[in-house]
Image (cartoon, rainbow, N blue to C red; front, side, top):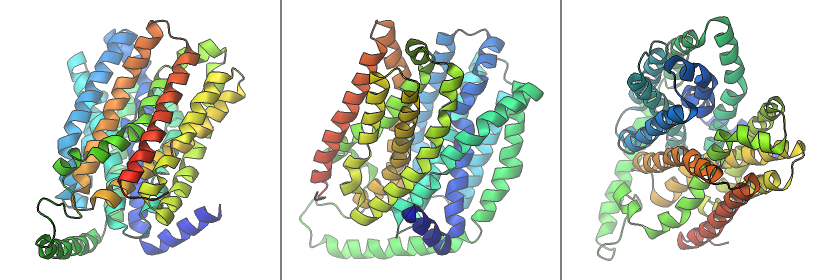
Length: 423
């Protein structure tokens, strides 16, 4: 708790508006997250006469398309003024919410879900982490960790509000209200928080220009073919170390999404009440922010590369607890460890790439890894679903997930060594 207090106090003094911008942007991404869209899933299936499988196929296809597009759209944050960029992304998500309120065909539904996923889960999450990693040169890990509070805040507040709105006005009207909230609430708030950002951005570009001049002067002294401190995305893709740490980075999104997507089946096998299980999400949300901030403090102290192996053990513990116990308390322990892992994962990504590959092309690199994470969230329901259909028991499935996380820990230790970090 002392670390939390010191982190909050220090950053509120350093750049409070930018920090709050990161929190608000993560919070606003909720309208494009799976947990929020799924709240009206039953009504959507009924409106378009879709089976569970058909709706899942439409959702997965739209999510995969979102991940593919993010590789290209996400890198534009490196070149566009953050104020213009944010206004465009928020407006795009508002249009997607408005479309959901009037959509009448399956084809338009797929386009609408693509827009919700792309502008919400994809670009707004990307914007929150990338902007703080770029402009907080000191205390980058804690800054990204504190901004991650926006995600559990959305998980705690939006589901109940959405359900109440659907009961009061209807599911289509709920989405129209969401569009209004984006345009009348989030957009002016974010523009206000970015007031004066041009000065900060100019200073950053001047620093990048100075580093570029210094890099050009030093290039003559480096061996031919050696890379400078700011890697391009193409150079990252040719770096073997990137592929060592990638399985660890993707493990949480793959495992958690797969388990949450098939949660009804898991609850039935365990003999739990779905209502009791849903209540445990409070523990997930409550664990996310503190874990992210504390892990951010660790990153600031020892470096992101050295901290790399320490975020996945929580996921291993979560899977093992859920696999080994049918007691109702196991779901709460799973949610606590799962939420802690989610908070640490949100903090790690941007901080690691900024530390290892530099800041100039951070947006492009982060867009690539965010796209891969979105891809993993689309693939896991299909893969785990196929295993369930093939007769694999839930306990075995959870052991396999824990094994994947253990493999990620081992590869991340190897990757940390290759990145030059010492244990």
